[in-house]
Length: 198
Image (cartoon, rainbow, N blue to C red):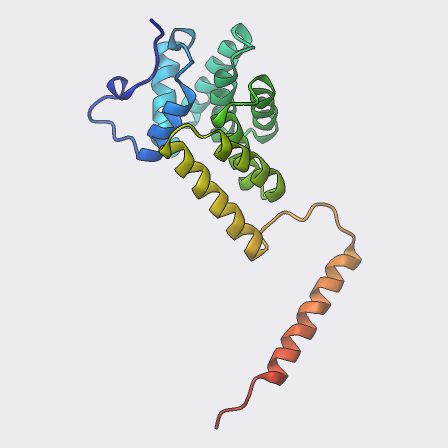
């Protein structure tokens, strides 16, 4: 029988939010925990509960242990997702992108791989890529909890796009000047149109 993370593996005094429980369930149905050392399992559960609770030494230890697991089982997409998440928590962005991309390429039908890669792109304000992977995750959702996670992430991305929080990429200085000029003209025209109330 395959060992998986379930509610029974979470200590009773350890509160796990609905979102982290859904993530845990999305990652681990096919992931054998025997491939992850027990200390790393404990740290992964803490990472799911609240990543900010992990101290720097614990984050470094988790990354090292998951790196070894991925080296031993390079074909397991879920391990790469966990490793990518741990790299994100440890603020190692470029390696996290590479691991999550590899997870998606290993299993293009993985809900969690697309969701977490979409989340990383969202946090990096690369909204088009974030929206693409989040949409794919929504299509791959297998239950209401997964669908809800994808829906909330897609809503956050739409809000970022609406508010102009997207990373603009490489633009020439002239484009920034033109944008500022258009904004100035728009503000002046709005001021002229606004009626004076006495």
